[in-house]
Image (cartoon, rainbow, N blue to C red):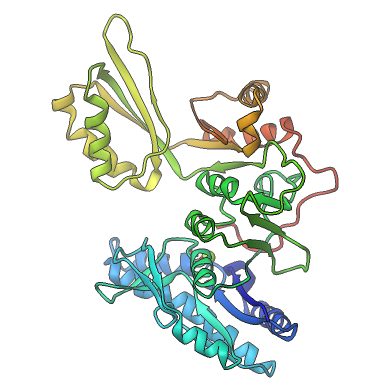
Length: 422
Ligand code: ASP
Ligand code: MG
């Protein structure tokens, strides 16, 4: 008998009817002869609504209480799904993250899973129950407090549980048919990808593709666990995220897809002395504030001043902190001023075929040039090229690049079944 871990996202659980539909699907999987462990997200936009509520009572809610509040969303879903299954005559048991043995570090709001001890889940499965687990949450090993894993964290719960239970597959159910060559909400002609390597998927997620959370892909890669991303609204085969060595018989396409990201801002330190230690000072200050930076560009220094500009991108949510930290260094470093710009977007082209195919960047830049889009920053890795553009040109940029690489589908538009995309 196979053990299947399924995860249902908020858009698949938006109201009572969708919960009943999901329950039917779970029971069908069980009836087909599988053992089933299900991870659920909060219903619809519940997490955002809870955040709005918290914001309405306090501009800076204590992290501990915020986690207590947010984890309630997943608890509602798990109990309702379990009830709906009982109503279909099957037996289900729901468990919070803590009960399911999801042990994390103690950082509220972005906790990392450090261990999974699924004893109770295993026992319930052994007794023949369907198990429903609240996603996105765990319990801190040290403080014993309830933690959350960061937005979209239920994916990570599912993969971590699947690895701990040695499941045969982890199915991630969402509101689209799988992973697309670009966000179908922006590129209606985006194509569903049948198979993608976990390495490419990791770059896509890191570059802003929201279908799968980055940490979940990293986790799956580490444990070599296949993920099947598919729609809960259809029975179509979705996208398999696999280890590159597994079952790739045909040569993979050069480009897997185009990702975009609007969550970052650009910060430029203007007029930095071109001497050893300047960059170290700047980035040490930013690192000390635990800010993750992404792209970095340093220009050659102007001949007459001997000064240069250093630009980098960082999450918009960390923008003001970074500005404050760097302002404090103005005297010491003697730079001219700071320029903070949050009207930027990032486009990333991803594909493991780039390693062996020259000319990919040239085609990318030409496509942007033809579309009249200015490139503000460029960075690349072995299998990715990213550019920063104006925010209001990002959608056009994504469409132009998607077309230039021949990724447009010829057979109709991608279907987006639900969700507000919020
Ligand atoms: N409900 C949480 C969120 O909206 C976790 C998740 O959906 O995975 O971010
Ligand atoms: Mg959600």
